[in-house]
Structure formats: C-alpha cells, structure tokens
Length: 89
Image: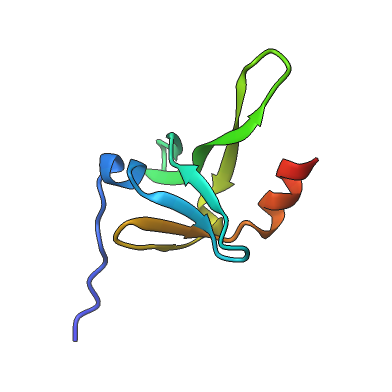
C-alpha cells in the first residue's frame, strides 16, 4: 500500500478549526502563516486570541508548526500544553 500524503491549500487550511488535543479547547481559526521563504516551509500558524488589550487591539497566538499533531479533513489538532500557560499570563 502506498503512503500518500494529503495536500491542502492555504485557503482550505484557513477554514479548519484549531483544537488543543490536551484539553479539547477550540482555539479558533487560522488567520495567517509564518513562512520561511528560503526553505519553502510553514514555520508557524497565527490564530487570533480571545484576549483583547487595553486599547482594543486583538492579540494573536503563534503556534509553531512542530506543535501541530494532525491535520484532518476539517480540524487541525495542536499540542497546546505550553500555549495555555502563555494565554493565562
């Protein structure tokens, strides 16, 4: 049996909900990507945070690509164990 990797477009990834596998928390949807153009790799994904700063500016959460455990048909599962600590600070 051949091992075929799934391919996703950027627009398709942006419609997938990001979920923390440790807590089952829905983190939101991908807003943007950080891409290394010299190596042609996605380095991290950017998700808008639920926290709003004093001046009404929405902060973002950056999740390294190494923390992504699985990209499914309609969800992205991430290891957010360290991420949750950063949000609560």
